[in-house]
Image 1 (tube, rainbow, N blue to C red):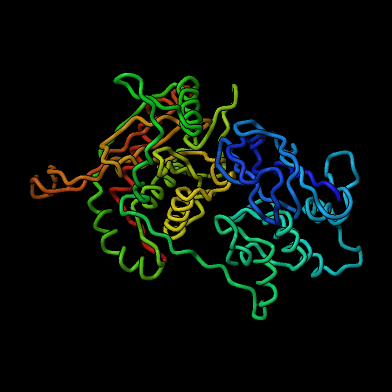
Image 2: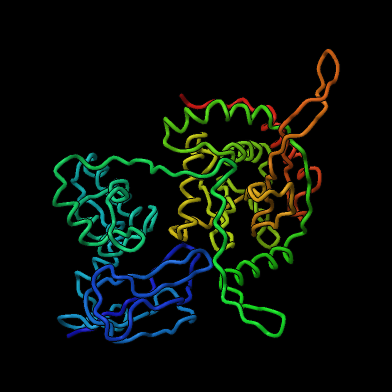
Length: 453
């Protein structure tokens, strides 16, 4: 018999540690490939670590609520055969090295000098595709064993995404991928977009949070703050201590935008199998304004201002338990309205079901939040560090308004919304902050976008 040391895997570029939240297996339990062993939580997302071997769990190195660093051993599993202990001063068998470290080997391998240009290009494409799967660019987590099988069989990330998973949270297991390969007589699956629906205002309004455990002391009641609440509290307090918050507010007439959406939403849903909410429309205007005011798409590092090239738009999303998470649409300025709508719906649904990856909640350069879905008219949102601005959209209301025409003024019913812009006064002055939100308002009031069909 031998031993296998299951370690905390790397879960994102900026994720260095995680907290053990719940053990799913106990000492003495039999574990199989891709079995969830333990639930962990990072400052980005919650997930679980699965087994990479079959055997019996003989040792747990950490208790619940303890912090584990990436690369540290979580559990020791007794396996058939000789000892297998990666990183424990033992020589790692070749097949295990290939399974866990295949990416580096693939990237560093160089084709034979006499290889044709076409073969080199094909080799590079295979390496790039395997790298995507290995670093977690997809919507699901893939264990090292599954990634290794995908590499050997030449499966693309798009094809992997379409294979039904029978593991926890639809995770792809070894048996899933082997069954798919046995039946793979037709050309590879083509990527398709999942039908995801959300409410008209933005993303689905979350269900009421579950009742927490409450203790009583006399006439008062109290409960412990959850881990997520503690993280949000620390993040918000840190932001207020870091940035000089200042706000600008502007009222926007979105009657034309409302009418445009009413006219296209039915056709959009029939063609795209997705709802067209207001969120991607607001985002589209924000993206255009960020191009006009690139200093709003920046961050501060000590005494340096970093102007970001990519526009990675974060969207604050309410979770079923009442907490918030901010998934990020990377390179949002490269997406048209259809792409934005699908990205918004997809991220919102996966955020609420706990299926976001760490990479999907980091790297944002500007944040948008729709407080109107809760009935708020305006707000003073707190900047999501290290960004320098955040825009809140209030509720869209029917209001009497003065309408100016060449023949005179008259009172009419218009649909209006208030934009609340918080920005970092350390580098963003009132003129820039005010002109930015005014430009967003202009793009919304003079909506001229069309769908690509």
